[in-house]
Length: 268
Image 1: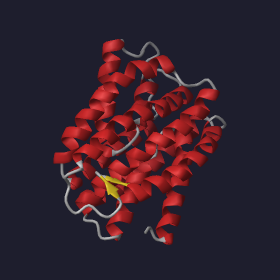
Image 2 (image 1 turned 30 degrees about the horizontal axis):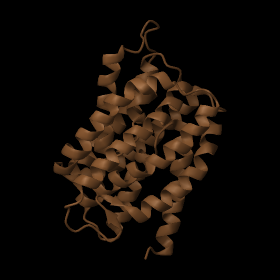
Image 3 (image 1 turned 120 degrees about the horizontal axis):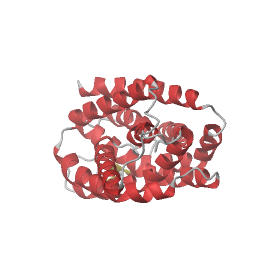
Image 4 (image 1 turned 90 degrees about the vertical axis):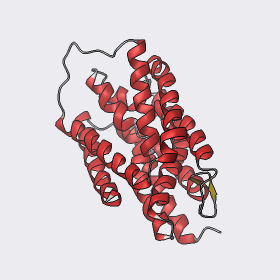
């Protein structure tokens, strides 16, 4: 039976990540992974296993959060659906390679280090606010398939919905910030669905999983966080369309730097 204090912690985490999912187009994984890692280690789960379970559980919640967030973005007409369709096949392939192969053999501390490095890099790129060349455009179909593969693979390793890569990538290719955030929200669903299937399969034979685990997914956390995040995500979408682009970038960067620092401490 899940204790009341844990339910409160997970509800607050779900509400916070749901709001940020709508605000910044992220699936919430970059927020959830450090906090779920902390919650699980405090309850006696070994660090290495806690990191893996946090990554898998956060990705599972993104299935629900992304649906709520993208619905609100779609109503505003800012999701670039043709771009989603071109990136999605590569995303599914990259996610499958990560969750079925690399994730099961890489140690939890190494995954924490990968998480910290890529999140920190994404924060730096966003904070620099470098202006892309006016003539730069998105690549063709093959190039977008490759880009989707990279997004899916890295997302599968760190348990994030892909916005930490896809938003900087799209803005670098002269996609407007609001369109990039909305499109990243839509990309979160295929990323999450493909990776979660792999996490369940690869974690099935894992020893010492705590009660409530389904593969690497911690089901009690999934249910509580997803319930709260789905309700709050539309509020984040409303805020995203009311705030200026520069402020969104600063919020995104500050958030990522803090989470990268925490996961770097877990890696070492």
